[in-house]
Image (spheres, rainbow, N blue to C red):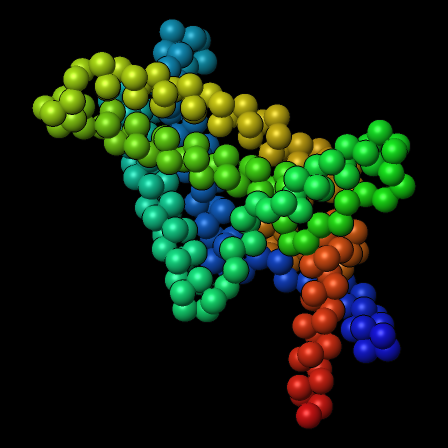
Length: 244
């Protein structure tokens, strides 16, 4: 207990702990930029008769350049997804790292605990580790939504190739799925993600940890108490190893 208290005091003096690596921050930046460009150029094509869409297409040099920009960032998005998958496989096989974004039974229990706490039926909020159920839900939404966007986008980029062995209706179906999934993704970001990282009480005006890579000692203790305990234990083990 004394060692944990000493580590806690040491962390409190430094003020911050590392939450995201440089590689993770770079991945997020690529995702952020590619998503914004895909949303702008894609929705402009979907709603091309709207005034804002016409203005955007004209200022991008016309529909041909708008489509070209969309496909370039689609390729960037695809390669970033492949890189992310490769990194996860490498981390699991080479470093034996457990995938912390996998949902489990505890996440469903946390949902029930959160509802009970919000309704005043429980005096204690649920305790979260590195990621809570909301973050896992959003992550897997990006995974499944991104997979749909990549597959349908690839079909729309090469329609003649696919219609050589598939019926033409398949391309039309991919176009509908691509556009609707894009709208769903944009609404999810605006309604869910922006609130969670910008407007939520306690972090307003913005949570910048994904850009700085650091989270305050107080926030980790409050929002990710189980991770905080593990972090203190790791600090204690490191200190004990150095003494030995």
